[in-house]
Image: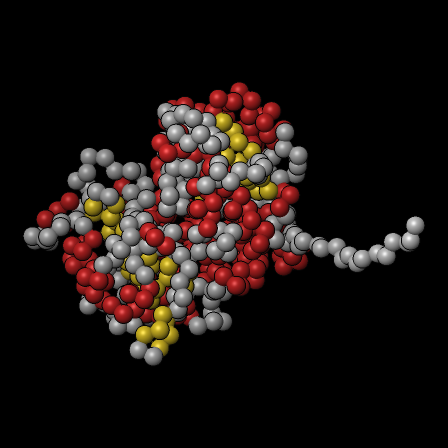
Length: 466
């Protein structure tokens, strides 16, 4: 997994033009916007179950990678096959090339993409609309995954198209589902209901807000009304704590904005609205990092949090390793072994005072392959909130047979986990009436859609003498 996916995928994408050997998918470039249908018709396979679509604006923790971003679509599809048995011939990576603002790429003589700054938002949305309509015409029953779009466009696309086609955003929904599954198991350890927790999200972008949305929905299911649930969150972005005092707030952050008077009551902190100041005053029980700010969870931040709660739940989820908010070894030592830890990158378990502390990896590969398997098996027309919840619950329960303090199953169990998630998603799609396939034997249905490579046996043949 670390070779075909994160963290190696990030390096491969950065060097994609330098290492180019052959095309691995379709490029839909803005200058060719009048020929989208024609370009799609050139693909050799007509039966496509799954498309991973990117515009490469926000790849992993490395930002705008232009046309090189086709590499993330390829990597995701490798994981779909590896972890859930999705037929590689029935998947299609697509790169929407709308230019790049990465000056290094624009000046690189080997860069394969369109040498142009990213187009205006108006041009961009018209182009995306044309791309989606062409995809729907060519592959009307395809499952489309949005991958590594910028935070504003990612949310916009999901909101605009999720009721028009079978679509899913891994950075928003996938990240949120995996973090939620780990959190459900952490709650089993603490014994405290989710509705009693105080949640601090450090890095209120696409992933951070996606996680917040998943936790908020779970709080509402546990009995809080909408406003009560929103009041259990504090979100920090590059400008500091998200409050109602801001002149402009992204619409997906607005419900979480704290009253501006709240900070005024905190007194004279050293850094009002910043991480340590918020931890001191809020006493969070859950701290989640999606900021890509290396070392942001300092010893002072963590010891302050640990002094206020028995079992702090701390998830530094940023990728790659060089951008993680804190490493598990420090988190365990600084909290005296009290912290419940999950990370975005793979880390070894921590040995502290003669005891081993498990570290779960919140890897999206734990969720999206199984979701895709369930969608394809049931021929679902939509990805509903109920289907996402079924995937989350199935993932959380997959850790029960292991040490529950690990919070999530190990990636070595991905095939089994993906099959369980696939069955749960397919069953939910059938129950909600969004599945075209109504087979009651869900296990057999899912198994019949798992592709396996067949390696033909061979043996040397002794050629007759001339």
